[in-house]
Image 1 (tube, rainbow, N blue to C red):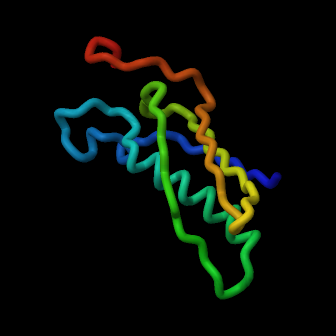
Image 2: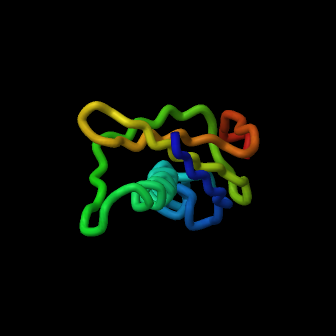
Length: 106
């Protein structure tokens, strides 16, 4: 099974506070999906013929905690085979332990 992993550091513009300043400076899901797409595209492009491209089928994210500015996030993409066509299975893991966030826990 082929895998590819990359690390990303959460910056101000990756946070939901970039959308609305009244929101906390925490990693936005839209950024997480972007990072997943980047890593998966790099893996897929190593495995498809010239002139072909990949198309996303489904994204499912289970939130376990919040990512804060300067936190290092590891994105791992795994290629799994199916009977219909090769598929990418995304595993998204954090490099550090993420704690649940509350308004009193910036």
